Image (cartoon, rainbow, N blue to C red; front, side, top):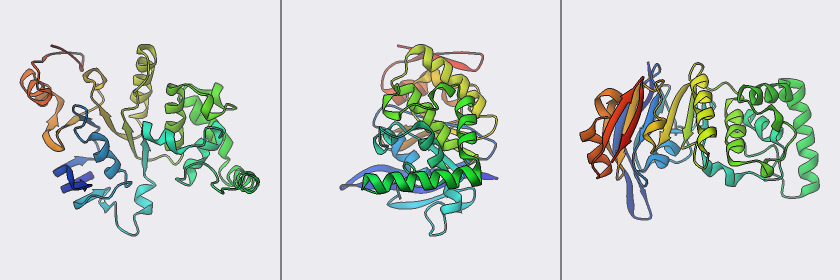
Length: 272
């Protein structure tokens, strides 16, 4: 069964064509890496696939449904989306558990009333409803434990490190058990140790959700990913298995520099 089907997807913004004639189909059994240089259109494509940016032309189906149809809310609830750009949308004074539980509603935070007093009242009310109906705190703690950050449960979001914020937003995206998880360059800003730990998290997540992972780092293409979509200047450069696309010739042409690729145990390294 098709997980995602894109046909002739084109995006124009401010008179510029940023994505052009993107067509591909991904099956439910396949995890995907979207790979390419900076400015290739990777984040734009994933924002469209998650239902957050409507294309100028073309169609996008997720789980066989038009992601931009009027009744697409149920489809969007099946998608967990994590991007560094989301950090800007959250109140840095929000509690970590509030942010995780906001995933129940697909909202940015628990309450958004502009007056602080009302905001506090609404938040407290919604927290009680979540706790009674969903056992929200328990679920939030379980997800934080799954991502090895239970020590963050009583912290304030704005006080966290970049890597900790990423894991909190992943926990938020998992609260409705989405069958599809989209991760947009999630290791940006992480040091080497934290990146290694995060790869283990992705490996674990791939057991319960299909994953689409955006990166421009070859070493992040994990054995769990079966397909790769290469983008260059807003167009598809290639869409196939890793074995067929991750060659010296393809990567050299994609990145406009001579590349040598080495594969070992399903992991890839490259040097100039």
